[in-house]
Structure formats: structure tokens, C-alpha cells
Image 1 (cartoon, one colour):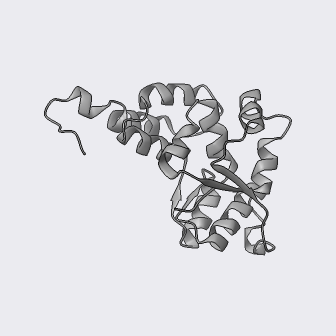
Image 2 (image 1 turned 30 degrees about the vertical axis):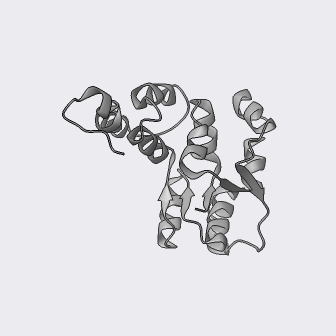
Image 3 (image 1 turned 135 degrees about the vertical axis):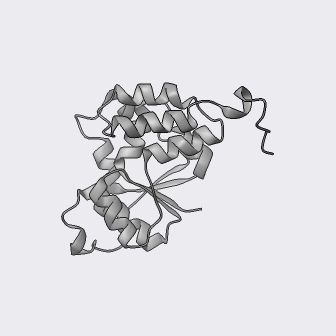
Length: 171
């Protein structure tokens, strides 16, 4: 599976100490060099810098092989380059949170998932306690409607297989 990521998912998953969920779900994640540079910005939290300084083997940084489509110029460099790279690699998933970037990627027929999607899938697989992670996410600068966050916790917030005896384990 080929997965390309923009800056935000990596940034916030590091901050809420769930960055390893990307490896758990996708095994390998590719980022354009512009995303790597954004993650190294001086204003980036220390936790992100520390994680990036010991970059895991499953994270691959690549340079674009072509100039991005000028139709993407209204996006930030990370979003623009992640969409371009995802198209070039025919990625199975694009991790992106930016609303305009998500819309543009969808119009280009890329399968989009964001930080919340990664967390929801991880919760479905019993890899994390979503209620706790959402609480930590709320303490960051992550932007999402309170209603959406509450709905996610209500849907995925409890490890249903261990709490509801009527639900069977999936094998």
C-alpha cells in the first residue's frame, strides 16, 4: 500500500503520542521534502522535532519528480506537493487535513483520510483509547468541530469488544 502524507497528520499524531499508528495501519508512509521542511520549522513543537530527528525507517522522504500543477498554487507547499506526489505514485491513500486540500485531492480522485480518520480506524482495531486521544488532541491547535469530536468518541471511544459482552471478537 502506498500512503503519502501532508504535514498535519504527522504533526498532530506526534503531539498526541500516536504517530506509530501510521506504521501500524500502513507500514510505510511517504512524504515530500516540503513536508519534511515544514515539520522542521522553528515554530514546530519540540516533540515533533525530536521525533523527526530519530526518523523511523517506515517514513520515506522524497523529492518531487516534476513541477506541481499550477492549479494547486492556492494551497500551501505541503498540501500541494503531497497531492502531486500522491498522484505521481498512484497512492492508495493521501493523509491530509486541510479542507481545500482534501477537496482538491478528492476532485483528483485520490482517496483521502485525515488525522481523525487515522485515529478512528486505530480505535476500531483497538490500537488506542479514542476518548483519551481526543482529549489530548483538543489540548493542541488541531481544529475540528466539537460536535464531530464528540460523535467520534461516542462511536469509537470505547473498546467495544472488551466492554460489550454481546459483541464478538473479530478474528
